[in-house]
Image (cartoon, rainbow, N blue to C red; front, top):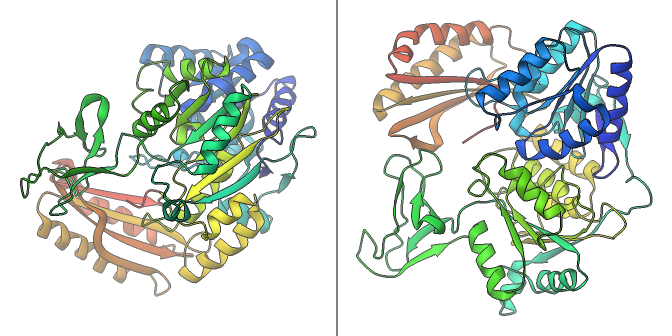
Length: 514
């Protein structure tokens, strides 16, 4: 486990380790969590290793992916860089696995086969007798706990390269802003700092953990919120298309001009999306040049690369985006990072909510002041007292780790317990509930008394694509009977699953709780 703060030179460690491996005539696989990180990472690897590098990610067309795969197969290249599925690159003489940003949940595949790239890498590395480097500025609690128990070797890079200091981080309490009469989505300190950055001809990164224009649409008279007719989730407003969209099943409809429930005309947009932030910024500073990066603007092939390139070439003052801009990016002129709604992830029904918030804020803060110019970070939030926000501002991973581990121990969550999630989806609500209750009874009978079986309960989003969803959670430490019991469950329902009457998903070590 290579625990290096942002800007400490983890990539250089990777490059030198790979150079050693290649000198021995062996091969290396490098995993990066998201397609948006791939261009920068690939550029650095190609600068060092030239044509020996193959790139594998979902943004490639079928033909391009086949070409890269064939290069590996024919041993024309020795290094594969890519997202999750690159862990299966068909090298035969592996000397090293590197997993960058190892804490990232995108390494876990949420459809069948539900593998975690980290586990696959460790399994393959044991077969080849080679090391695995897990790199992160904010390691997952599971990895850090394994390092503490000497299951993993722990290596630390506590300082930034050169004399560059970690950026100054300030927390802006949005409740106080409201009391002071500031009703905008930007705190006064962030507005002031943005003006200064533009005046100095430097750049800023603004991060919002959402996409779309507003989060939901509500009637102010009767409180009706526009829901998706096929899923139990509110529709999101997308201004560019003047549409309401469901981010789960893709359902879309026109924006209503009056409330469907009470016919009042007081329809209001609530929440904040990237499009809305862009509009507000332009109103406030018309001369501001903004590049927006979210799922809507990066759908076209090569869009990630093009947008990041134009920001690097200083064709814009502000890079505004969702999670895809939070990590791995390295721009010389970025001296200000603004986080617009730090608490959006904190209130999700997920025991990892605080951990994900801490990781994301620490990562995004690390985009500022990575070179000669000092950096500043402003974190805007309505919950400034939460420990994940306070400790990310102090860049204190150890304090966060201790506090979060105590919470996990009390709640019997990983890394103290393993989890397994059994989810069932069916068009008939009662059938779904009956079947999942049967499964729970079977598991209680098959497993030891040490296993904790929670549920069955309705999933946090109880209906998606007209199918009702129920789930059962199993917490366990050592349960040899678990895998045979799970296999038997799948066998029992094989026919219904095959006929698509019922969906049964078994997820060992789940990451997506919704």
